[in-house]
Image (cartoon, rainbow, N blue to C red; front, side):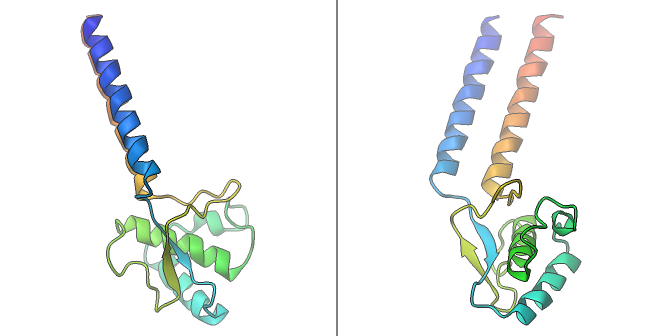
Length: 140
């Protein structure tokens, strides 16, 4: 029982620490520049979707279809591409049509992934698995 309490405290401390890091603005998103032309955005959107961005949410029934604009769709696709490349330098350019944002562009049910959020979820899953393994050992 004492071991379970220690593991729980470690889990809680880890989650608080990760939330503090996220809250300090370490996350970033790649979004379409507001001054980019629709033609340039369409070309870049096509590239991003063809090069591995998750563009399924942009389909007619997807959570990010609305607003149905090149600007909104390009922003989501650019960010997906950028996050999948671990925010590598140069992965948010798209021929000058994209820029880095430090505030979350998510809206309604359309959630833009961020590395910080994904890392936090991953840490929580790993810690939860550790607690479950510890519980199994206690009750065996």
